[in-house]
Length: 341
Ligand code: FAD
Ligand code: MG
Image 1 (cartoon, rainbow, N blue to C red):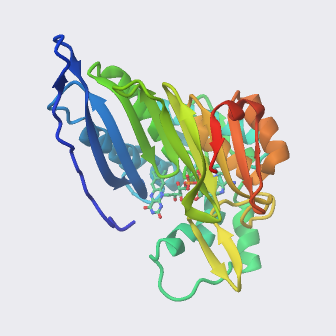
Image 2 (spheres, helix red, strand yellow; image 1 turned 30 degrees about the horizontal axis):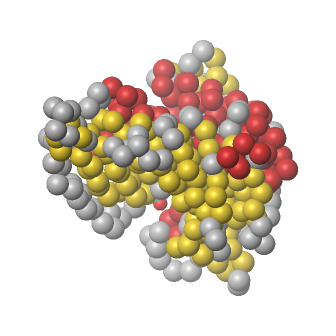
């Protein structure tokens, strides 16, 4: 992904004194790129010399380069994928073993809609590459035969995980694109919890947002939900106090259009084609980053009926924006969502 911009704007990190000897936190803001997406941070801290924003960026780049990216040859996922067909299997790190187990759980609960073994089909479509303008020529749909062959090399039921040893059959490929930013939010949360001088933060990694602590004036966090039909506009706002993770999956950012038909990046494992559940955007609200990201992808594929049941199984709230513009949400979501007037 081209580094299309890299601005780090550290707002006058003045720490105000309240007159009572107590420091009032300053706001540090930064915008940068990592994991193929834009990372926006607003951090409130009583440490005027805080380099929290830079450290969080380093943490994300490390996560991408050392653990999660299937595109970078230094990552563990790359090594796992390179082990496909290897009879000895691959000994996963404790972190990746835990991630894979959680992915397999969502795979089971979603009846296979969410499946991190979709790598061969995802890379055959290569929607990310086309949508990012990184490919030359004209996008053409994958040929049926290639798609059938790629699909035969997908399916979490073909994985064997014994303790932490993973046996990945020949031709298979893991792709953690659907959970990478959620995992990133979990790591950022660990970081924020350790820094006693950070009193609040709101951090977004593409479509995944983390809220933490509180603002100096005690007001709630506001997280806007984009209108899939007009992504620069909002359909409404979530008003949240304290720590939350909010992930959105949609068909309006990473897609290509051919003859008026939109082909986006979320693939239905049952067909090998972009999911077509009548939904344009799904937002999931929960405390856990991994779950918010995994469930938003799964719910996008499953659609409102099954998606609402799945989210409830994990205690998460969910909001669907259907292609016709109508909105459907879980009962618990109503407490946090205010529609745009
Ligand atoms: P989500 O709904 O969260 O996820 C959609 C993504 O999940 C798809 O893009 C695909 O990767 C995967 N997927 C599709 N169907 C399924 C399914 N049925 N089950 C499970 N997963 C599915 N993008 C670039 O263009 N260039 C990069 O260099 C790049 N590097 C990245 C590095 C990392 C570590 C990560 C996590 C992502 C990177 N990305 C990159 C972006 C990535 O390819 C996905 O497009 C992105 O993660 C999608 O996130 P989302 O929140 O928009 O959608
Ligand atoms: Mg996701």
